[in-house]
Image (tube, rainbow, N blue to C red; front, side, top):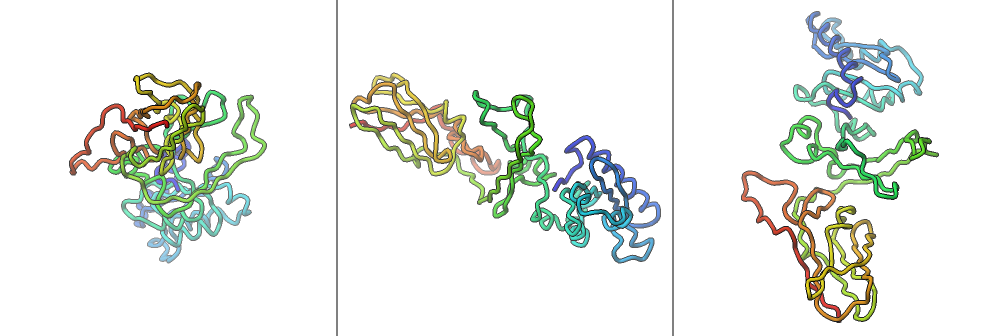
Length: 322
């Protein structure tokens, strides 16, 4: 559910129509809440709270708007967006869900917090979840696309999170939707859309500690892979460049890196056979997990509490090849 109106340029325009209804209601001596129903980018109807003016118990802004729109086919409601100047109450949220309206854009929810959890639980769109960049993050093969969750919606105390709320919340389920009309490299639409459901667990707020990693050292005189197991997924792209293996002479060993098990395992296969001796796995402390915690520091810092000790630019783990 969107909680502000700047997600798209059209959102501000249609919310302005709802605001005009709220102003009209205020001029009539009523409760200043307005709403607008939009389908396929076209304004279908507007409405305002008329409880005072008409002595009604059900004429809220959203329900008045739905009444003014008249009876519409379900297929029309399925393409609609409800714009409202204030967080919808339980009655209006229920009406929105009853008619299958998939998207709600509201002006504010500080004056009154309505049944937003009810709307969220029925598949409403999460507003502005991703960080908008000037350049898309594709790998060299054009087969892996990286989306970054907006850090301003994750870190406590920042305006985006205060206004829109967190992107993901513990205990809730979400669906990542890839639209079928997303063009491929040749400009052709996809054969079909894609949906991936996932559930969210408790937040991870500790900085990374390489001491929690498990290393399976290879055997001497062979080229089997060094295995490093992580307790939870780490950043895939960073794992390809911030870990390296150094021999007892301080020379970096060349080889091939592979990452699997959902970014929980890092494998290094040397170009030459392992010689017996002591080696070091070096780790740049910029390495992060999926929550933005790095080896150097946690993502979330309490400014009141003492800051954690800053680590050097590199950390090391020793292992022996026998």
